[in-house]
Image (cartoon, rainbow over all chains, first blue to last red; front, side, top):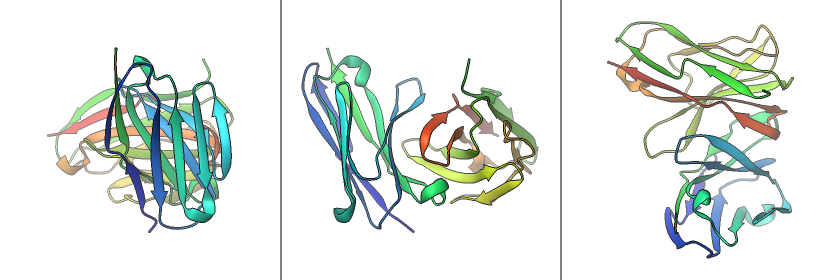
Length: 109
Length: 112
């Protein structure tokens, strides 16, 4: 099956710093999503981005499907950005939807 | 409030007991799915459904059954609970498995 890797596994930042999280996947996909799991366990969808670039406030994401990677950019980080960021990939309709192991982000005040 | 509702939030079972985790959504999403999350790991897909009357297996389906009689509801049944099924279970829904992916708040299950 498809393999998903995320880097770095852990990241500690001071408030206001920028960061880049990476997701590598082993096969072509039609469906790629980024999620944030906050410290209370709630999962929030950030982006549906099988290709191209999207931006939402301080967050943006880029997927280069031909090279099988996606990047999540967080600018001017805030303590509320803390949590685990997951990349997930699969086919249309979520068949074989596979989550990566996540990047744990801690933003210090 | 629109969203995905999971019940119960917490449950303790004895080995061999059966139970049903409930999941309901009010967004008219045709796609629904169940995941489990073990400590320090990502989510793993258990079962999913692309519409009422249609279900299929994910990565880790053994020991679980699902059915989808309505668009709104997608219950997950544990047939005979085992300690290996101790986990946090999340239900999700979306348009076609892509847009609008929404998770419930999770059910923390402990099997003793």
